[in-house]
Length: 239
Image (cartoon, rainbow, N blue to C red; front, side, top):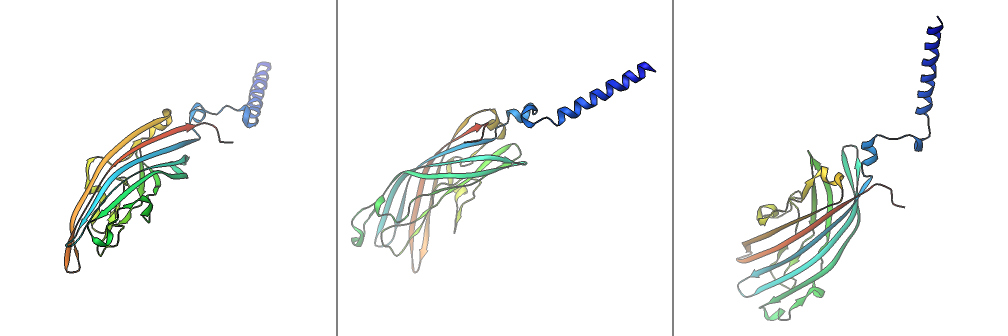
């Protein structure tokens, strides 16, 4: 009987010790290793460099243009259940050059970037998790050309990712990628292993004859895009 009572006593002490540990203040309780080592958020930097050209040829005039720009997009990423939340901090156009010339007597003076009414703007819409990969959806807003006064005009398309699926009237952006790939993605496991930097590049080209009232005009445009993406894991909240 004594041994049985002693056993009940030890069991009671162990139970009380377990209850005590469960109700310890949070800082004294050690979370599982997987939660300790997982980043709380990721800093994102996306740098895009682009240079391109365009042309419009009509019956009595022709317009040609060329441009180049650099944009840096910054933000951060957090986990939410089985997905991610993307936050935008800044999208800065650090470099913008453009020039347009015309054979028309009404537009004999070349235009420069200062004369262009619109400027490129990069919009990173989201980062989609699919299976074990993360896909970026971004688009640089296009502009109308020629910037000189003209009876005919068309939309000048700027870079977008495969995930974005950019379309404009009869132009499917993804189907006009002629070199490289605009699929900007990475393995999900990579962002948990430490800082990661990826580079992507592609060449895009489109040309067509387009009807304009009782005549047709020839339009052509192309560009080369280079993307550098970096994600830096952070383990503490910013102060």
